[in-house]
Image (tube, rainbow, N blue to C red; front, side, top):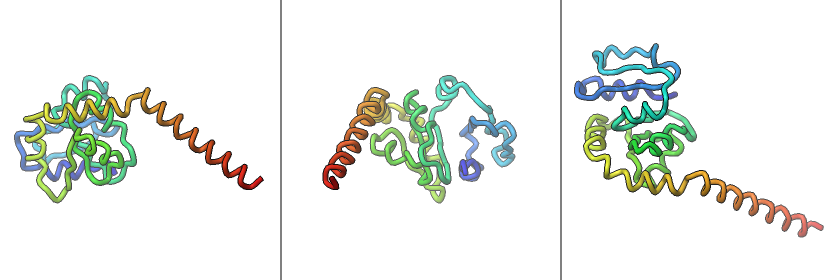
Length: 159
């Protein structure tokens, strides 16, 4: 479901890219076709992990809203997503990353993004500002108020 194999397959001939994998089961993950060009770090400290990444790849087949997309962006790391990443459209809307289709080469996209991270920083900042805790709280309260108003209007209409 996480899509590791998509990335490994796409990078098996790219000797100039090192794949650093984080997550619970990554120490046991085997990718001999990368010829030592990867490391499964296991559970990681997010701050340290994102600082070690030029680009973060989230290749999920299906994940409605992986927090890692927003966490990486909040740390200034551009993100690559696949169609299965539910919050990918938000990332793309703010120009804080790129979409990758597994039928396309991955290495050129990684090289492009790693060579010009400043291109993504305005979008990362805009997304961070738009989705920060204060804004989120305000939007959530406004949404609840709309629901209550709608429920009250229905109650009055049926009374």
